[in-house]
Length: 413
Image 1: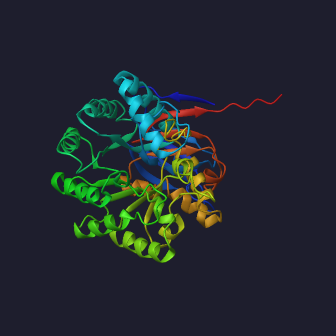
Image 2: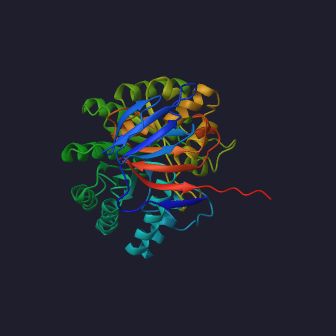
Image 3: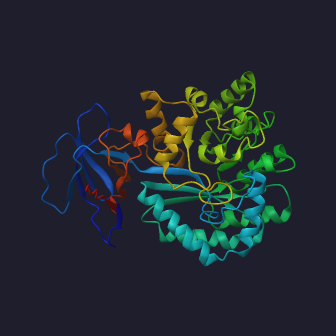
């Protein structure tokens, strides 16, 4: 399997023939013009303009995948973590980042982005540690890379700071947001006063006009439920639809009656909930018997109409040695961990990495006329196989431009 980037000025006019947009439905031709989907029909005429034609022969065409929760500033670093715990990962990372240079960071982030794009990702959100002013150099590096990759992938960044802990740390977060970081972030469960940290994060969001994306309740402690507070503050500040929460692990450990109450508030607040099965399976429950999964209540949240997403989280670092920036693999893993194995549930798991995170990202959610042509061609004849079989991605389109395509050769003796 060989990935081939396109040239600098490839066509943005395409006619994709016989694309599989949905199972048990006729194949469709998709016409792309000027970066957008122009027409969809069972059989479009042959155009005499400069549109390039590609017969997909029934292969699956999906909206561009979105990886809604990653950590590009940590990726492809050290795998040292003897205990496998969150606390050791934090300590190891703190030591490692002191010696890493910005050129080294740029190299691994380019590798991560190229990997993601080849896997069909057209939108990616990354949290960036903002402990103090020294981290602003990392912010500048990532903002530079966002400009470099702007025609291949949309990037959003979150200031993963420590709101309310000190004036210096708040100033560093404010500087990062003013430099161009998109979201106020934080990890309240790791702070001495989680509730106060949540309050401070909302205050900073109100001050800057930025939305929120928080690490919430990444713990096995059933009584640590700042998720409920986040839902209440979201409604109080009229920020419905503008707040994303990742992890929400303690929700899985809470008593059913408590979990039901909290999930009802999450639905009312229109929170985007991101499950992170790979990292949570690695880090949670290390010292518990029997060992729990530590993954949030995906099925119950979906049943309430919550916009649940699934994402990679950490990749090849002290927090998680695994990962490949492949949302379809994460959807497959979410299906395993959430016991979502019936056909309707498997389609829902595909939504966790397509329509749902695209909604949270601010992108259109469907392949439809007028929508930006952010697309991925999957080497499968059924949409369901995108989750079940993890087939190769054959091409990624960004704004109608085929930015990478993959050729596959299988030779039998």
